[in-house]
Image 1 (tube, rainbow, N blue to C red):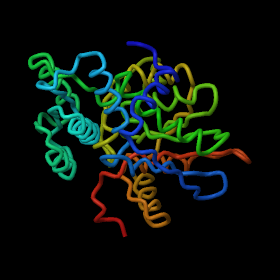
Image 2 (spheres, helix red, strand yellow):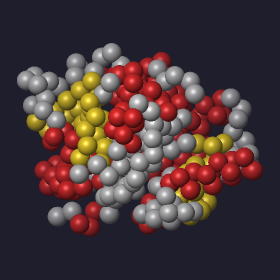
Image 3 (cartoon, helix red, strand yellow):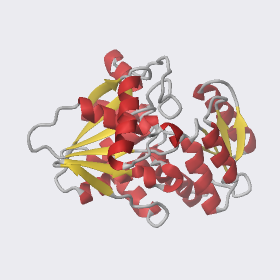
Image 4 (cartoon, rainbow, N blue to C red):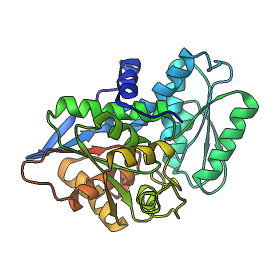
Length: 306
């Protein structure tokens, strides 16, 4: 797999200009900003990588408009690839775990995707999607561990750097590591990244302890979006290069952070996105440190937010 660099992120920003939204930052206290990526197309940052991946495939002549694209996703990546495919006029097939949230499955179908439920975990849906790509000739779009996908995700970090001059630290949630990899590559040498994971899905934390990517057990309130069983190669490579601060948060902290985002700022965040805010609550900035926290998704049932 190729090495992800800031040049890849810059190229993704140029390629996807006009296709994705430039989401705002909100200063919520002195020295602290929220990057409101939950306002992105389909409700998560994933649209950035989806457009970049599919546009690159078109540029290379790899994407046959009659065969389309295929992805495996617990929901958010599938939504992004379905949206990008619809905008580009190609069909999308999305394999999801049987436990994928109904709200995300409904949205996938509304976008015109052929949704196929397979197995109880992402790993089984992934296997099915790879097989489909090989059999049908569709372009495989990874949920996170693909250079074009991660580079697209990293474009939000470049926006942060422009909107929050001299930002010192960016806090992101980590599942499979695509967002982390893109952000770390975009900010390499200029800002620190704090990588936040649920205690019940610690892919990066476990990999750093073991010295290599390893499988972890996955459960907890954020498993629908941060439910990868192991960190991707890109994410692990960027972690070795940039040495982020790795933080773990428990389900209670994630739930509290999600309600805090709603009660204080009226931000509807899914549990995976709230994990980053929970991580910031556990982080101790130095005096004068400028910190941006990425609210990466809003695909959740807001019925329990009061």
